[in-house]
Amino acid sequence: MYPAYETRVLLRPASLYSTADLAAMWTLAYSEYFADLRFDERRLAAHVAVHDIDLAMQNWASKTYERAGFTTTRQLFVLRGRVETAASSNGVELVSPRVALQQIQQIRRGQVWPWQREFATVTRALTPTTIGAVINQPECNGALVCDRNDDNTTRILDLAGSPSSVAPLLAVVRQLYDDREALLMNEPADSDLHPYLLEAGLKPIWIQREMVLHFDLSPEL
Image (cartoon, rainbow, N blue to C red; front, top):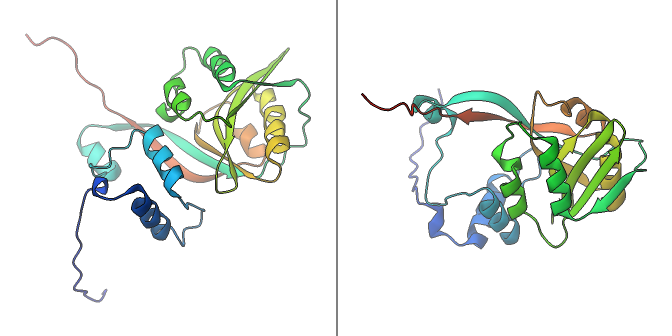
């Protein structure tokens, strides 16, 4: 039996607090978490903007979504780690982020990708320091968009290509950002690149579930 506590919990919308207060709350809540989730004011504001977070609504997680009719379609891995590939970056060209994103779109044509890695979402996350990289060789083509975080990590905003493109593209990330850890959000568990990202040194720190709700759009009789 757990001891009984007389605790009053006040639930208030996050929209009632300043970004600085929210960043402090976030950092305190995750202060002893196994992954470094410290947020400063600027990083939290970018997180809210990029992911379309409505600070006035609650998220009661997967059970609530399932009761509403959502179903899980696949697992998504958040990968993090120091790039350990010994591959050369020969053949990789640094380009503008938008050029790299256009190549990623062409590579992914016809595929359904997590919304956090869709063109529109990644475009909103671009900053003056964002870098694009592409490689176009026989049987080795791919593109990557990355940026630096304030917490001494490298954020890979998006990555796509042939499996053989992963090592040289990540080699560029290592050259550009030295010993920073790289973070890649929501790589589908069944993607062709997933095992090659693991080989290159990125390890899963979170597993998320992608959920969808199907609507019946047939006309009523």
